[in-house]
Amino acid sequence: MLVKFDNTTLIETIRPREGKGKIKGYRYLDNLQLENNLKGFYINELEVGSEVGYHEHVDDEEIYYILDGKGIINDNGEEKEVSAGDLVYTKHQEKHSIKNIGDTNLKFIAFIIKK
Image 1 (cartoon, rainbow, N blue to C red):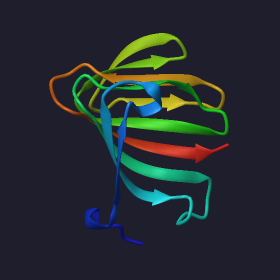
Image 2: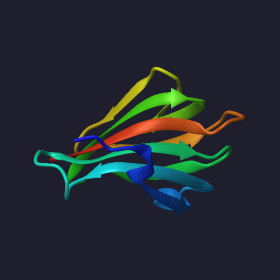
Image 3: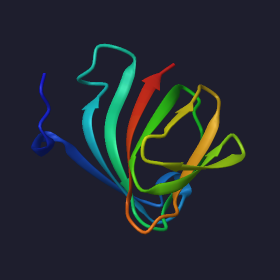
Image 4: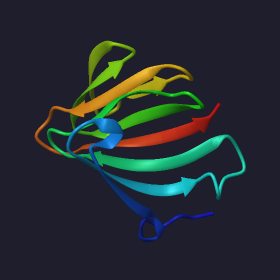
C-alpha cells in the first residue's frame, strides 16, 4: 500500500492534551487500515511556543522520532532536550509531554502502538 501525502488526513489541534498553542498532524495510517498493533502513523508539526500537555499512556505506547526543530521532552518527570535524529519512547503507563523551544516548527513522526 502506498499512501501519498495528498491522501493524508490533516488534524489540527488547539491546546493538544491540554498543553498550549497548536499542533498539525498528518495521519497516514490509522487502526482501520492496519492489521497489527499499530494504532496510527502521524507526521506532526508543533508550532513555535506550543506544547503537547503532560499525559499518561494507559492503553498504548508512543514513539516520537524528531525530524526537525528543537524541543523539551518531559519523560516521566525528567526534562530533556531533543532535536533532529532523537527518538523518544513512552511505554505503557508512563507519562510524557513535548514543548517546542525553537524558532521553527518542531516536526516529528509519531507511532502509537496498542498495548
